[in-house]
Image (cartoon, rainbow, N blue to C red):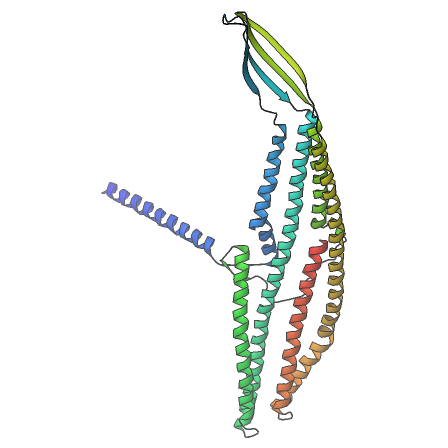
Amino acid sequence: MNKTINRSLIFYFQRTNIYISISFLLLTSLGLKAQTTISMQEAIERIKTQHPNVLQQDLYIQQQRILKDAGKVQPAMGMGYSFEELGLAGSGVHSIYLQQDFNLPQVAQRKVALQEALAQTGEWQKAATQKQLERSVAGLYQQILFLKSQQNLNTELLDLYTKIEKIAQKRAEVGETGQLPIISTQSAKQQIQLQQMNTQQNYTTQLMLLQQFLMDNNIEGLSDTALVPLSIPASTNEIETHPLVQQIDQQMTANTLQSEVIKSQLLPQISTSFQVQVVDQTFPNFGAQIGLNVPLFSKGIKAQVKANELTTKILAQNKTWQIQQLNSQKAIALNQMTLLQEQLSHFEQVLLPNLQQQQALSQQAYSIGELDYLNVLQGLTQIIAAKQRYLQLILQLNLAWIDYRYLVK
């Protein structure tokens, strides 16, 4: 009896443990697949490490560093057989020889330096790509957040129109007004509702673009709830430190090292050989030799070096042009930020507070019959336009900040 009970208990606990394990695995799986929200900084960090272009450039850098050992390759060994006979008696000289040429150490050193320079060029190219991706994903994030804020604004306006509609209905019920204010308010609400539908559609489309950009379909929205001006401290970095400029500098370095590798073809090679001979049927006889392989024709090699020097000059001109372009973009971004900040301050300190006060007073005056509904609707139209313009100013300011950060961070 006791044994039967013990077995039943053991089976019960085993089955319970299995259920618990299965439940844990299911919850873990659901947690991994659960949809999530994402912040702008999280999106930036993800795009800088997981985008295919960045991963490809990582492989290129790794490839160039692997090729550093390729510079240590020596010429192939030569093997051969030769003989000289004075007759048919087999009394001549028969030889088996091995020949090996060696490059001077400078050849390998120059190739190693070139491959490292190419790897560093890849590093700067990767940094430039990351900055461009950061600007793109940050700009897309701000545009999605702008649409999200527009939805919030539309919801706020619908609530406001609903309050006006209720006041209009009360006044109509007591005979103070007709049905026209109610119909006009309802028409305005319908326009906002239609605008809300379009905004929601645009929001969904832009969010899908963000999902594609980050290669993550589980992103369901943004962590931020509303569009606010970005607070990014100004940088003291000079344009000359921008990855696009540094990349050109590194290309010039690599091009100079490429000239040194080309010049390596003018260096002599150490030539060695060893042979085993049979002389007059006498074996073994040994022999060895050492010498230098010296290139006699250098015109083609010198032409390659000269062409490479012209490439360096072209890169120097590209660097000058790139710095001018970046400085111009920086000046435009700074000027745009200054103007937008002034407009934003005017909205925050003067226009929006006045309109909010006007709207509150108008609503109160309309509720007691001191103001016509047309004046109320006109005031609401002004508030709508002002708040929409305010959101657009924040978006423009944030995009200008993002462009500025791309240039100097």
